[in-house]
Length: 329
Image (cartoon, rainbow, N blue to C red; front, side, top):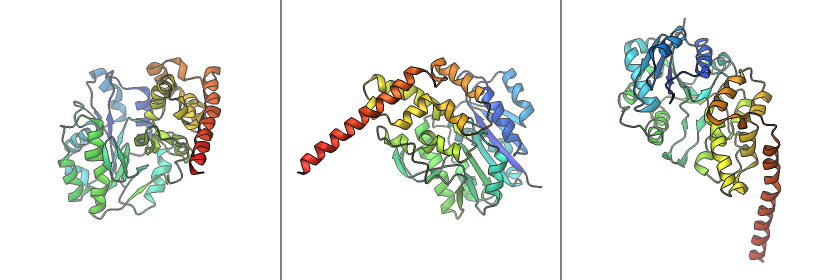
């Protein structure tokens, strides 16, 4: 019988474990024989005990090295001899709502392939805030086979993960974006659960090109349509925090139609995906962080902003096109 070990990284600025995390762990327990829970914050003993029925161990540490520091910490706790005896290692974190669709379906699909390690989505090669990145599997959910786990390249990578980095972009540049190329260069093949070459239709803007390449934020609706088990928390929070500010500061014309949908109609989009995820968990979290305004997508003011933006944007585009034609003439 195969054995699958999962390492789940948690962080919460309130030093609590959210209901969405418990739901995620319950789903993960259906496909993992053992889960190590690592929290990068100071959890009370009560909070730690609350999650023990779902996991094999609870580890707490400072948020140094962020997710990669936590994964390395758990690997050290497990020990390489025990780790090499398992068939698969799963690395996950609480940056997503999951499972939006059953994990078992995803694992059945990926286990039928001959890949050595896999993820759900791949970040394309791009110049971002984290630097010039090679194409790589996004680290919110990664699975490694025993062949990779037992390799020197994999062990060396984790031995070199440092706790010195506390900045998100530095961790992405030094670790997340490097792991896939390192294992590829060692002769291992990777794959993704979602073939997202056609998941760019939700973008269509360029006011922040560095973020548009991240499909988990800008194409999350299409990822759900493809039955991705994951919805990034930032897919909702980013738009709630960013889009209204840009509207207020006069940059409304640069906001795409998709950005409005992401911001104002996220609940309806999730419901339309036919996911069985208890959406009230997400609603309560959004309500706690951002207030009631962003939960009910039927408010007239949101629709006015949405529809009013479209003709204005078309007018600006037409004006630019006419001016360009005059210059050519």
